[in-house]
Image 1 (tube, rainbow, N blue to C red):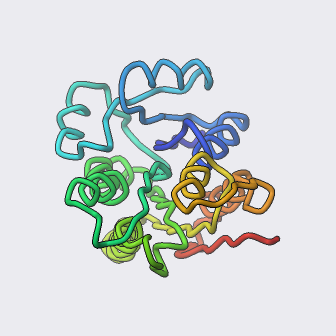
Image 2 (image 1 turned 180 degrees about the horizontal axis):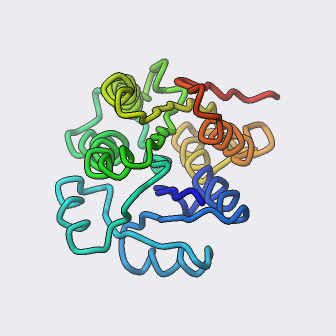
Image 3 (image 1 turned 90 degrees about the horizontal axis):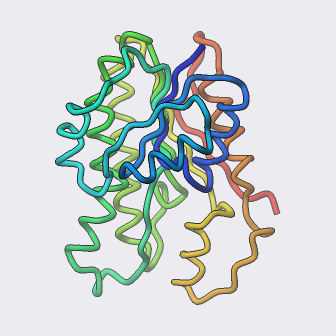
Length: 229
């Protein structure tokens, strides 16, 4: 039975992936920002373990992990959590930069660093759920896109560094997906939200599971998922 550590399990793509893995009986470790959220996730996914660490504060993740039982091996580390705040560069203060860089880039880097020993034992898989903004930056998406461009660089470097250890690394670049994040994006863009126009989170979950279930003789490095409508 494979063991998966998942961030962002509470909604959107993360919830779809977690539900699919739970239904097939895999061992889940769900990262929660606090004890209350951990209790909620454990109630939704019976049998799943939880770890508590706040992605908004990457400097304290190591401390948080040092006070909790850690798994001996991890078959896949799925970085799905993320935040977004749009606006022109001229109006983006350091606080906004720090918030998005912490959650979208620095915390995934720190989680990966801390969990690499377990991933090496399992010859596991690290999946970074990126974004179309990680490949192309548009007006008012600069801060978010910068965090996601950085996430691509992190994944590309990690792939080369960990290949000798048998650790696979995949970046997934979903287009606009029907999720709470997309509701916020439409609100900030001043547009009406219609979930039917965008990718179902289940479709992105299928792409992610395809990557982690691929036989060991192959590796998906980059996977772009675009709306089909």
